[in-house]
Amino acid sequence: MTQIQTTTHYKAFKFRLYPTKAQQAVLNEQLWLCRSLYNCALQERRDAYRKCGISLSGYDQKKHLPEIKAALPEYGKVYSQVLQDVILRLDKAFKAFFRRVKAGEKPGYPRFQGRDRFDSLHYPQLGFSVSEKTAFFSKIGNIRIKLHRPIEGKIKTATIKREGDEWYAVYTCEVEARPLPATGSQVGVDVGTTWFAITSDGEFVENPRHYRRAMKKLRTAQRAVARKPNKRSNRRKKAVKRVAKIHRKVARQRLDFHHKTATKLIRENDLIAHEDLNVGGMGRGNLARSIHDVGWSQFFSLLALKAVDAGRQVVRVDPRFTSQACSQCGHTCKQNRVSQAQFKCIQCGHEMNADENAALNILARALPSGANVSGCAERPLRSLGL
Image 1 (spheres, rainbow, N blue to C red):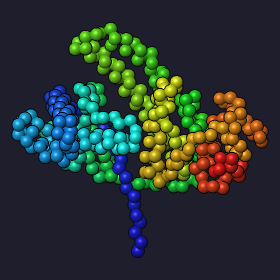
Image 2: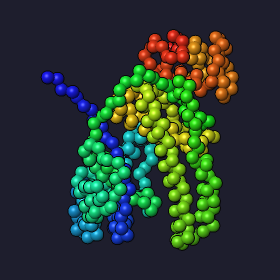
Image 3: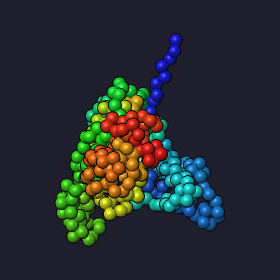
Image 4: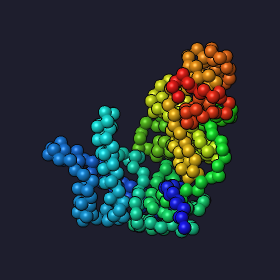
């Protein structure tokens, strides 16, 4: 009897926590202690290398945690594995730094964490549990939680996050893939700033421009902060929180839109192709604000994660010349692009919307050589050697 192999992957579930004022004080204290430990460990590594030429590892620093807890009793209030994870975070930061140095990229040396840059406590294995109304965390206790959806699979890790004045629990679970039935449909997606996405099927997804719509409120809130120069005043702190709240709402609106758009594409298609864009580099140009507003990187990441769970295929293709090549005959020329919105091939006379033509080219590049694309000729992008 043959056994059916089931693939598993990791999936995160995020829920709102409602700690009491006493519990909030405990959480804030633990965040402060963990941040101090991170900064001290970073300073120790820097001094060891500069003064003695010694490179400390994460294991070397973890060994001294019992001594730290004996010398500083306040660290006994923090769960042991949470403290170990703080050292692990720093170790990962140094490994990433050395990897970038070796690759010849901009190194980005690990930096000290400010008061507002260390906002999470991570439980990597033990010390936590969750029930219908409460979440238990070692050294903290039971915190009221709102489970707005059931948790799937086996819980592997738990993280407490502070977002402004709100607290959240994020559980990483190992779940089995749930493949969707095949649809027989394949689609290419061309992303933009005028339209968020244009598919090879001729569907135009409107760009909601969440940040643009919030700019008026944001401008007013930021001016209120600028009028309060005393950084220790309560009025300035409240004004800063109002700015953060607006940014948080924009980020959540964008995330919700990306989830819905990605889910629709995954449900309707077996294969989704999109350009492999250098979003970070594009975000430093003249269209930086618009590019950061649409959030292509987040959308592509969600699309890939949902594809793994649904048994779909997401293909990244080379973006070069997709907007200049004719999807009918494959002729590539800058003059083919009549305007920002219209494409007309100077060789075969094929004319259509420029973004839809690009989406057809993207799909053609994702398919095996010689495969025919709906709406394309039998020779897609031949002049590009594909």
